[in-house]
Length: 184
Image (cartoon, rainbow, N blue to C red; front, side, top):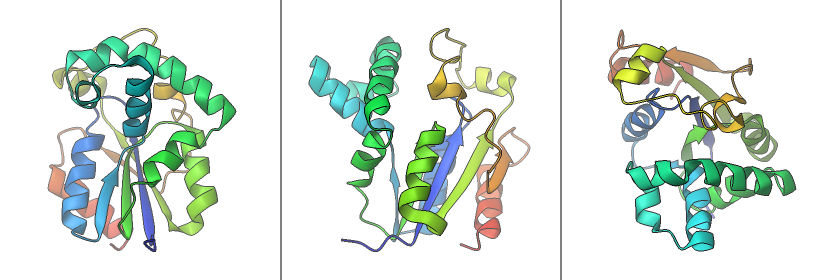
């Protein structure tokens, strides 16, 4: 079992750039780090339940969007029984000293990581103006963009760092902000 020294939680709305920032951060941190996605075990479990192709659900393709609403509803039902269920499954893949969680979406996700990893947790919010998200392919979808999976952290105030990904800073400059803030 690896000794996890730090868990960096990355949060943000769809098409804000959280995956891009997470990948750049992990590359900068190097071999002793990895990205873990909570969405991966959700999609894996959904795939088993429905016999839908997991590779398609993990891609950026249309199949994921077709099932997104049903996956969200099903995932909420699981979380009501055990709020940390998908976080635990995701962390089963953790084999590095530094783990970047690229898709924190709920207060219960933060609660799980804070309870489990205490002061090793760093929480980053990536914000992005709607017009830029639209340029990146985001379109508002009722039942997706107005539910807990997208909105639960809108009123969360305990970010260790908030970075606006508004095309004023390039990816490397954003990574520098994160690295400097947390002395990584």
